[in-house]
Image (cartoon, rainbow, N blue to C red; front, side):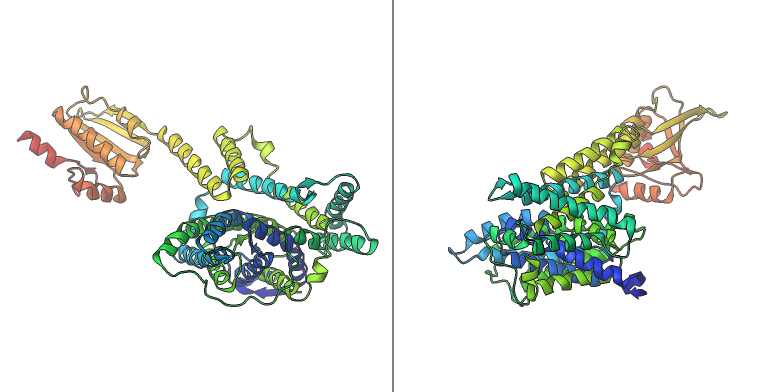
Length: 526
C-alpha cells in the first residue's frame, strides 16, 4: 500500500510505522545519556526528543530525517546550566530555567535563518567536508557507545563483558543477515526484539535501559505530558546578555548538524529536501521546547540513518517515532526499561559501519592532497571539538585552497597590432588572490603609448581587482601612456562605477572600448 503525505513524499505505511518504532527504541538511551551530560533530568531529555521529533517530522524540510536531543548541543548546555545555577540560590536549579529561555531565543534565531533563506548556504559546503563530517560523526557515535561497556566508570570484565559482547554481536548479525532473507520487516527492530526476548525470558544478567537510567541517579522515565510554562528567570538585560551567546552557539551548531544531515539523507534517498524549511522547523521545535520543558536538539544522523535503512521515507516514520517515544514515557516505561543496552549498542554499531565513508581509503591517493587534508582535518576536529568548529574550519581551508588555485590561473596573452597598439588579453578571474600575479604581467616602461587590456576571457570579481586596475592605470599615466579597458561585462562596469568614490574612474558608453581614468589623464596633462 502506498500513500501520499505532505509534500508528495511517497512511502510504505508499514515500513514507516516499523521504522518509527525502531527509531523510538534507539532514541531512549541517547536522550537519557545526553540529558545526563547536560546535567538535567532524563525526562527533560526525552521530552526534548519527543517535541523535536514531532515538530520537524510534520513541518520540516526533510521527510525521513529524525531530530531529537543530541550530544553536540548537550556539551554546550553543560556550561549554560552550571553557570545558570550559580546565578540562583542553592537548590533553586535556576540553570534549567535559563536553558529553557535560551532555547526560546535559539528557536527564534534558527527560524529567522530559514525565513531569510540562509539555509541555501549549505550548498557551499564541499564534498570533502561532507566526507570528513560523516567520518567524524561515525567515530563520535562509536566512542559514545563504548561508555555502555562501563559500570561506575570501570570497564566490564569477565562473564559480564562476554555476555554484553555476545548480545551486541547477535544484534549486529541479525541486522546483517536478515535483509538477505527478507526486507519486509526492519532488521534493527527484529534484532532488538530477539535479543530482548533472550534476555527477558532467558534470565540473562546484563545491563538494561533501567539499570542505565538508575546508574545516572534517576528512578525511571515514567512521567506525564509536557506542561506549558514561561521560563522562570529575571527578565532583564543582564539575563539576555547571559543567554544570547549560548543561543547563538546552539543555533549555529543545531543548524549546521541538521543541514549537513539533510544533505546526507538527500544523497542516500536520491531526493532533495528544503534547507530553509528545515531551518524554520528546527527553530519552531526548539522554541516549543523552551516553553514546554524540553531539552531541545537538532537532527540526529544516527537515528536518521536507522530510519532510512529500515525503510522509513515519509513523514509518518518521524511522527510514529515521536509519538511512540511519548507513549513510552506515559504508559510503557516498565517495558522499555527491560530492553537490554546491548541490543541498542548493536544497532548503533551497525549505524557506525553504515555511516563511515569507507571510500575515503580508496580515494586518498586519487584526489588532490588538499582534499585529503580537509577530510582528515574535519574528521579530527569533529572528534576533538564539535561539528560546528569542524565544518567551519573545513570550509575555510577549502575556500583558501580554491582561492589559491584560481589565483594562479590569471594569464595574459600579448601582441602589438598594425597600429602599434599593444594588446593584453587577460584569461582567468581577477580577484584579491590574483591581483599580484595580474600586475606582474605588464611591462609599463617598455610598452607603447597606447595599451589595450581585453577582459573578454576574464572577469573582475571584487574591489581588490578594481584597485589593481586603478594602480596599473596610474603607472601608465605617469609614464605618459594611455590605457583602455575592453570587453568589460555589465556587472564589471557597475563595479567600476561604484568605485568612483574610491578611485577616479570614468567609463565611456562605447560598445567596444571602456576607457578608465580619462579624467585623471586630463588632469595630468594640465
